Length: 342
Ligand SMILES: Nc1ncnc2c1ncn2[C@@H]1O[C@H](COP(=O)(O)OP(=O)(O)OP(=O)(O)O)[C@@H](O)[C@H]1O
Ligand SMILES: [Mg+2]
Image (spheres, rainbow, N blue to C red):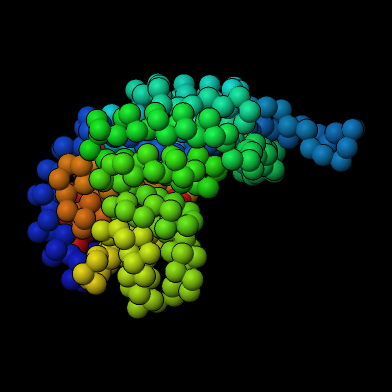
């Protein structure tokens, strides 16, 4: 039995509509603009100490490549059944090809990705090792990225690719991990849509006029300029950030505290985390929230229903290691299970 207090009867009453919304997720077309990242995991067994230097020598066992950063939001949307077009920048390198292949394997349209030969595809490679019959542990991480902004030509090419696709989708998602994709022309092109969902790490005011933002707690604290240690300050931040961005709603995701949805009329709705017991890895949970929230809005949900479905999706991926995805079938099963426990 989970004690959700006043939230429980509201969730029960909304259940039929939530199931109906999930049934409408499939085939919704979407444009996702993102800082595309490749997460790489190289693992091997420890063989011996090197004679070149006092370091371990690992015998390679496997390399796993999965979408990270903004690419994780893209992938989450595709796994939820959306017809996704992705816009972003990759390098002319094997990592860029890997990312594109991962996307195309699940039917994502990659034609709005700009290849910039002057920059590496943002890649985070973890090297992890294990002794015989011991747990695997990360030893070092190697990041490939550029600190330069993309050239004006690349910025404009990407902005044009976005602008030409904006009329054909019911929403645009911006997944901004601060890796250089979101320059003013790109943001302006994305904001050409009247429904824009923004998940940005900093400087939310760049997206003035977007529909809804989904900052996590540290991002909301940085944007507000004060600590969000209690409900009252979270509520204040919701209002301050709505002022700053001129958005319709501010959805602050609060990790194990769930999420808080603030509206321009001063009201706020708190949604508790649905699963606090089997939490293994919260990495990428925010990307999953954005994916389910966006599809729900496009399927006709109000902001509260969409946030609840985002919260539900997050409650599933925090049970899996690494960035993860979920499906409509899993969401329905989880909703059924949740309704039985409240
Ligand atoms: N420890 C936790 N226990 C239960 N639920 C959690 C926990 N952490 C996250 N969640 C769920 O995931 C949602 C999003 O989490 P969080 O606020 O940590 O996002 P985030 O920091 O943006 O994630 P990321 O940037 O790695 O994608 C929360 O609103 C909640 O539903
Ligand atoms: Mg996040």
